[in-house]
Image: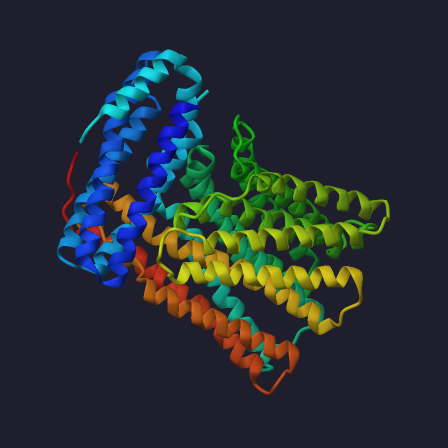
Length: 146
Length: 425
């Protein structure tokens, strides 16, 4: 379960960053919020890149399909990217109501996305990808930079 | 194998499917308030039995079943990964028959006209059995059940049993069957409807949404056995009822399980990572607190005799629990779906969640809801003059407030579609 474990840890780390940024916005500390939001955005986008450039192609090659679950996950990544842009704008404009409103949508979208990945997709990756390929994919993901 | 069907919110049913059920539920809630008001002010006078069953079924079917079936049509694809084919058509059949059936049943209770009992049994039975079979048929195909999807399946199965018993009771009241087992069936009907359908569904859904909405730690592993244990206890109770064995032990065990669940959920909410403490968090906290109160009184009732007032408080707390969770879900689901569907359709000016229903409006509803529960508690405990009128008015205000904001969300949705630019992808 090395894929599940690694990716799940990344999800949780992003949740932490998201929550600290949200707290700073609630406290009205926008300077800190901007820094924390940037960390969240970068980590989330790097996580997506790892999936899209390494994990998903490996899985697609083994299952012989690019039209399966990975297509839906990539579609949801696009939705999250769109929201990240809007949230960055809100935090820059120090617009807490807009930020918190977008944060609501972002959290629901991200959490349901993460659940599906953790409960189904990563579990499938761990089951279908052979051990040596799994290890090399994991190494490749760790090396990916934004 | 990986089921792609229903994997994405993208495959969720049209927003109208959910909204029509939620709006109908709010209208039924409003009508319930008016019915209570008419009784409190002496405009209507019915027998205590008719009054009690009318209120119970207004709430259980008109309000709760409408809310919960609407939410299920939306959540089954997202939470359990199953797709209900032709959701608009299927939900419309359920919706229309449910509305007609509830009214027929309420008239039957208040007039005791035999034919009304028959028609309500047929129409209401068809509506609800159609809904449960459509959903169970898809849920049964799920290969790797999560605690949530398994709980939903068991909850819908309990609802089916409650409906079948309900039909038996209606036909007995209408004089169409002898109804030799009326008392046992009535007890089983309430148990499966309240513990099996309402409470079990809330438990199952909470396993996913509490974590999803508030970013809480996961429920402990033992929670995954909770839904199965509750369902097994209900089956045992059914058997015990029909072979005339005492059921107090089972009731006590059930009540304790729900208390444990309530405490665990409160603890999850306390440990949530998101710092926001909006109205929905407060609705969840209140709901769990009321569940614990209701089940503690129920547990006490199984080991010693408690007075009628305390029993009534237990029922009120259970109603408060169910409504609190339904309101919490409404204030998350409706703004999210409005934004989500419009964004997905390419409307760049899609209103943000706070523009659909602002958290401050939800907070006001929370205060109205608390005031309503306090007023009814006062009525039960001390019955000061005019309190039942005030309490009834607060029921009207509570559902009226929700209805207004649901209609506002629909208007906002339609306005965005008609008057803003759409980007074609």
